[in-house]
Picture 1: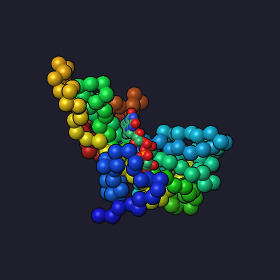
Picture 2: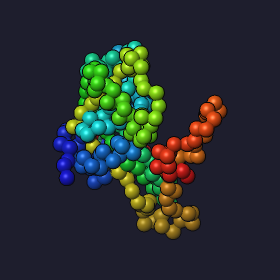
Picture 3: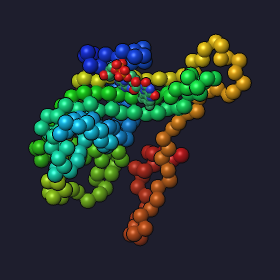
Length: 217
Ligand SMILES: Cc1cc2nc3c(=O)[nH]c(=O)nc-3n(C[C@H](O)[C@H](O)[C@H](O)COP(=O)(O)OP(=O)(O)OC[C@H]3O[C@@H](n4cnc5c(N)ncnc54)[C@H](O)[C@@H]3O)c2cc1C
């Protein structure tokens, strides 16, 4: 089990007992999130951008338009803070103050680097598609040179990060325990829906087997 080194920046001060620097835990939270939020300062003002991401080993990747000023700022070394969040439940205590949420989250810090080499970029973008929908890359038309030119891929090494997790029920004060209200946890889950066929789907095309891996709720 390898821990990510704890830095002054990633040392949890509030509810530190809910923190972890365990690489496997951190990667699990990152991999199960469909989006991250990338925060950085551009022109003296903070921006927080929701973005799809993917991971390969100890590298986090995301992509964006090559023409984007902000992608360029990150490419040029803007310091970034990236967060990943899962809300797992509403925790409902017997007083308004004992309400909370169950969650898993990661914060990571670093500077991105551009993935410029054409082959590496293609491998990275394949990783993106295959992370979201395994089996999709080989099923669809390949990327064109134009697609590749207009897309910038950035990668950030995951070596300064922390996870924070809350689980369990409400923590009520003893004097609230005789309240007449319901208390408990309302679990929250992300559900994949039934696939919707494109209206212009060519005759004879059926849904691919790789969609079966998604559990439809
Ligand atoms: C869905 C959700 C809802 C939340 N709602 C609230 C709320 O309503 N009010 C509230 O006060 N807090 C809430 N939190 C917790 C919040 O994210 C912070 O942990 C908390 O506010 C303490 O912030 P701080 O900067 O004082 O933490 P500090 O402990 O000073 O932060 C120091 C370092 O600890 C790490 N860290 C801190 N928070 C997190 C985190 N969430 N995930 C991973 N690493 C972390 C980072 O590396 C950070 O740099 C919520 C968290 C989540 C995920």
